[in-house]
Structure formats: C-alpha cells, structure tokens
Length: 488
Image 1 (cartoon, rainbow, N blue to C red):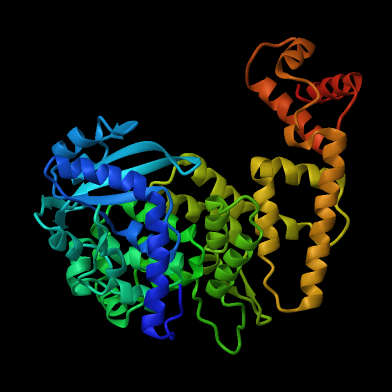
Image 2: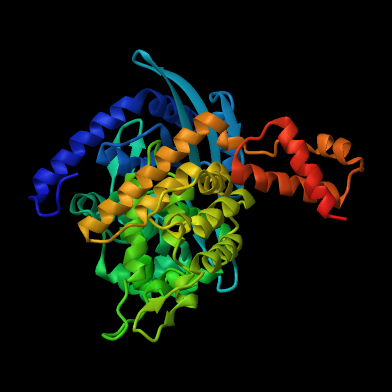
C-alpha cells in the first residue's frame, strides 16, 4: 500500500492496478457464480474484506459476496454448483460453500460466503443482533463496520461501488465508519474491538472521531457475548502488529471491560520506589516472543507473553530498603490467567497451557546463575512437559533489560540450560520421565493391591528418578523396599 503522504491520484492508481490483477485471478470462479445468480434473476457482488484485500494486493481464496437473493434462494443456486455447502450462518443471512476450480494450471479451493443484503442492530439488553434483510447494495454497505470494508464490485460486469470513500481511506491507511461511529458502534459494539484489530492487522491509523466514540461508548462492549469478544481478541493477538491494537484497547478504556488485567499493569511509581513499567514491559515481551516464533503465529505463546506478569499488581510490596518486590506473582498470575480465560470461554486445554507457562516463567531465574544439576534439569523439563519449547521462548523474551552485559549473561545462562537439557535428553529420554518401576511391579513387590499406598510408592520412585536419574532394576527394588519399611 502507498503511504498516506503520497499524491492521492498516484496512490489510487497503484491500488486500482493491484485490484484488477487480484480480481482477474479469481474471475473464473466469481464470474461463473455471478452468471448463475443473474440467470435466477438476482445480483451478486464481491464485497467487504475481499474487495479491501484485492485493493491491497493480498486477496486469498476466501471470498465474500453480497446479494439481493434471500438465503433460501441462495441455497438453490449454490447447491448444484458448489462441492460442499453449509448453513451455519443462515440465521444471519449467510450461506457458505466450497468450490474446487482449476485456474490456469493450478487447482484451487475457494471458501465462499454469500450474504443477503442486510441491516442489523442490537437493542440495549440483547447479546445477539436482530437481522433484517435489505433490498439494495447501498443499504447493505452503509451498515458495514468501516469504509474500507464498505466497497463492492458488482459481477460479472466488474462495476466498482464505493459510496463512502473507502478507496481514499485505504490509500490514506485510515479507519473511518460509513456513517457516524456512534451509530455504527451502537448497531454492533464489537466493531470497537474490530477497529483495534484492523489497526493491528493492517497497520492503519484509526480516525480521531472513531477513537473518541470508542472511548465514550466503551462500556457498551459488555453486551457482546464472551465468545465474540474472545474471537476478536484472538485475531488481534495473531496479527502483525498486536501492540498497536492492544494499546488502542487500553487507551480507549475497552480493555477495562474485556481484559482489565492489562491496563492494571500500568502501575504507579514514584521517585522513591522505582521499577519497570510492567505494562510496557509486557508489550515488549510479547514483541520479543513473536520474533522467536518458528512456525507462524502461536496464540498460546502470545497470550502467555502478554499475561505473564498480571500477578504483579496484586503482589507488589514496598520494602524497607526502597526496593519493590512481587513475591509469588507467577503463582497469583497463573490463577488470574485461568480465571480471565475461563470467563472469555477459552478451551480447557488452552487455559491449562497458558496458565502453566505463566506459572513457570520465573523458574529459570530460581536456579540462579550457577551450574544446573541433573536433578534440576529433569524437574524443569518434567514441570514444563509439552510446553517446554514455548517456555524457552517465553523465558528468553522476558529479558527486556537495556543493560547489554546483563542481557548477554542471561542469554548465555539460558543457552547453557538448553545445552544441558539436550545432553540429558540424549541419555535419559527426559520427555517421558517415569519411575523405574510401574504400578503393577510396585504391587507385586510390596504384595498389596491397588490403593493410596501404591500412589505414594509411585510418587516416591518418581522423585528418586528425578533426583538421581535412571536406576538399575535391582537398585529400584531395594530402594522401594527400604522406603516401604519406613512406612510401617
């Protein structure tokens, strides 16, 4: 995209050339579908994010269309044409389908959504929008969230429709609403979070009047379901510039309603009790964690990086020597993380993984800078479990000091830990640490059946394994019998 300070005619011509190139690529599929709608007496237009992305030169194989056909008519048209059809969003006027097509010499799979012209609005107590269908594309576009998403291309004639100046806003990299932002956010308060999400995804600026409305109407977000808020937050966190979107949520007060632990990190400090700005530190840790990602965006790592220090406000203490302490903030933070993610309806598995990372993020520092014993390495790996790779990244990201000497020392210390882990993994299969005797062997050796005693014996042998490494069978049996004798 051109920069906002470029001459508008030049900027718009560049945008239009990209759009033509992108639209030609999907034209065989889009035009084929449009002709079927025409033959049935209806119109069809590419719309919203698909037009925006075409203009940005980044159109994928997910295509959004709008039509004057009602959902039942859409189904009649797409069922004989598509390779698969689903009706999950039909209550909101949306029919989804999949179309396999050969474009040029390449086989492509297109995910398509066709939505009937509509207008929707919340009442003051509802968590779900009331949907009513419209009769014109202009009526449909005015209810879109932002002008850059309120553009359409009528098919198959390729007529560009832009009644609200979306093309100019796209060239200027700015987010505005088609009507007043107050009316737009009243219709769907989630659009306030979308503003932050698009700012993060596209690296756009949000128009001042939109920011003002977000600030004044932030409390309205509370009528939106937790699931919709969570999904929007995930898209923001997985974007290219999450810091930008998160900053907007905090500055407008939206975060106070959807993720209050984040603005709470803005701890007050004075000249007598100096400490890091925990809020800025957390955003920096997030940035640094993103830089360490290897296989694309990692939502678990990003949430853990953002929330790793949320226990600090509750554990802050001013010591007599002028220092500020946050004892056990990782334990408190893990509990707070679990509570917030539960309220946002995250899956149990994700809650468990993120909470575990928050709880363990200080474990490395607990061992100091001395040589890691085999026992310490085993326990570190055992406690991290499948989160070990992410814990490596989070721990490294948590170093935000500007002191190059200190940062270098921490990095070398963690390099040493990873080397020790690799060495022991070769020797002992650390990823699957278990006692040297299993439950059946323990029962046979002790001559007792299943019960609490077997669990206690198993735990004893596991601690022995962690402390001393693998044992020969006879050694393990002797240690078990010796322990059993002490149990009376």
